[in-house]
Image 1: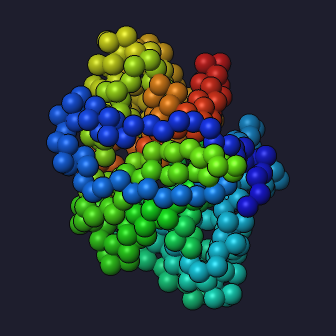
Image 2: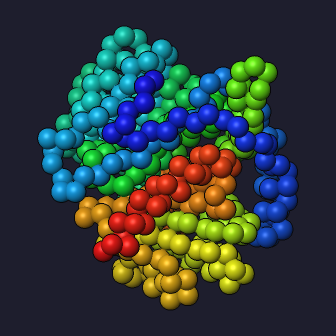
Length: 377
């Protein structure tokens, strides 16, 4: 899998020390009133990988937009991952209109790879590429509920690789909007996403999705060569079954120095309360919110700005689509989960909490780019 400068992927060389997971969960339980048995849920899974364990990607929106330059982005990166699949590719897409990815999926299907697609029904109807996949023999499952969205965006390849983040599999998501994606080498995380996928195939969406994430706590031991290794802690949750807001508030409650956030939409009183509490305790809080949602009813923008001040509306003429919180330059919360009641209670969503300073540094850089554009507005 090759890096592509247009998508700004970042390959990590891994040198950090282990993070104490048990101490982390004890702190979470103390600060947010969570029961430790609930937090533990199941034992931590430890696995070993060699080489790259993660690649982090950010879109590079162009202003003004020119469709002649709509190439070399995350669609090409994901297509390259699919091209290397040997056994299976399961795709969950809130929205889907990427020709390069559709071609890669059809090619994989034709060479004997099991390919399946789950898509939000509101966006599948009338989409030619979804029809093309179905006509090629790729099973397509739609979430046909009358309320709540199938809002996930993830891909599981060969039971070993997980691709997820805020990035919708669309041309707008790739070339106009600010988005992030991560590609992680982890069979344990792949098991989690595969379990969620199978629930959707069985028609279990939103509140009917069972709370059975196999491996919510994963320790990835990364072999660096010459007898060197490091360990990274990753937490993985799905909404609504895993009480994601409580997990996010627990992480916010641990912040000691700085919280940075980028939010497409932010209407959660509880998450805002957690940030304000840390701000009153002296933690620096900075944020950028999507401009078209910032002034809407129930938005937390005015409330946060009134007390924190350093909360800005974004400067992308299209959409700033991140759903990211960075804590103390050491922890990143990312995924499909907007900071809203709908994400918590009715949608299908996924979240990763990555405890790793090198990953956090990449998201801090992205925050700086988004923040600087917002500051200039």
